[in-house]
Length: 392
Ligand SMILES: Nc1ncnc2c1ncn2[C@@H]1O[C@H](COP(=O)(O)OP(=O)(O)OP(=O)(O)O)[C@@H](O)[C@H]1O
Ligand SMILES: [Mg+2]
Image (tube, rainbow, N blue to C red; front, top):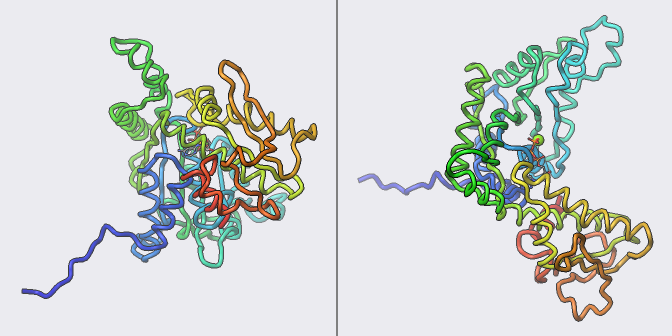
């Protein structure tokens, strides 16, 4: 009998695992997308990826505001510590040849040749590389609106990881992750989220209004997206994709977690303001519940929730700062009085009665580690996000 040790091929390496944890902290739900990105990144790290191809070619479909663009930003944030390290191309904006020239530059001899800086030059796509991570992130948004010229350019990148610029220089995309997002099938998916006809319509719409999304509905939406992609795109395009991921609509449970995430990110933003303006805020359970009620609309996903937070928290806080009612070091407690259309804001003077506030750090710039132990805004998930981005 062979003397052998059983190996576990389901375990991922440290760097891929770190990416996975980071993505789970920044993205609520959407496990399929996270898993695909992590797998592809690990193939790249171990040198097992197909040579002369981008690291990964992903097509993300699904309803609006469910995290398609956010996943791409979060991947960049986790790997190169910068959510803006994404070269983003809105396909609808590149219809004509002079617009394509913005991407690849114009041929030599053209008027203005020297002035055109190709958006997709090697320097441009590599500009966010760090000492340790040499990965580029390229996002083609609204792919179904791409013109034929853009389409051909894209097929070359997806297949050979090469793009030829106007002046014939080649750009190598073999260290790039290519993400494409689309709203294909979105109309049908929307119809599923707002059922009007049929036997089950009333019950279904009550469920959806309450933010409940079951596996049956997600599965149906996923099939709709993939079928729409197959109808719209040629097999040669579909064959070049590593994965088509249809994002799930966000239900109340997910939106509730996004409330925590967004409030935590808002606190971080405040902490990064100049130190003489830093303050801390805490939103009560009733306040969070109100944000959730105001911000739940299945058709717009987290976008609607973000607008509610903007209107009910960010804008009033900004008014309070502008009118000198909030000062550096203040602790602001935010609550929702039953029946009110707005939130109430109080400056807390006696800190012993408000244990959930983290102690103000010396410079007010970073979130204090002790926030971890507190019960308020920084609890669980939110704390991890805060600490993660701090490291960034
Ligand atoms: N799953 C999620 N986890 C965490 N935050 C999310 C999630 N989905 C959406 N958000 C929040 O909502 C915002 C809007 O989402 P995003 O831009 O990713 O939508 P999208 O799916 O790309 O929609 P569209 O099809 O309209 O482009 C994000 O910036 C993020 O703050
Ligand atoms: Mg988007």
